[in-house]
Image (cartoon, rainbow, N blue to C red):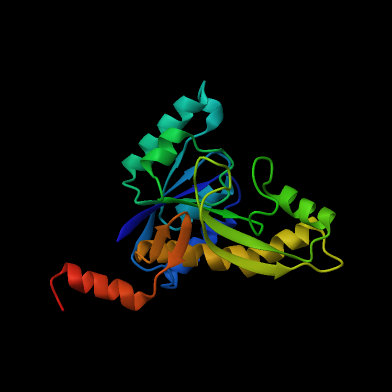
Length: 223
């Protein structure tokens, strides 16, 4: 069973989706062991406490430099024995100390179909405002590995959501969460915990379950 650390900064709707997925048995071979918030007033902390999940706060403003913040965050992750780090609305950019220590073990949910409307400055409602302003007909969400390029890591899963003529940034944001983010984030977490993600030449492949079972059997000496 892998330990999952979820990093948050706000209301924690994606955290709640993960908690619900865990309760419903959607997440296999993984359990949320801690929630780390970048803000002490984030409602996500209350969601975690209501579900008996350990919490802590590591806020960028409490440190003189980005390096000190990164080091403190890494210590928190190690203290939680995190095997997988999930960014679920975490607004601070991770530095090299964390991304190197957890290479290919950090995943992020982004509210667009990357490479559209992503990178520095694209977060929250800004993403949906940009999509509507540009006039695209389809948007969605992407789960990807975190690299040293903002929103530039290998894509794990994507799900499209149709844009309607009368959409506002607010109702589009809600529909993308409900139809895409809350669906593919738990799926991606489960795939990781089950050992079903294969990263080759910068691209992610989801392995069929029967291949994983065979690998485990071979490892244990069975034919």
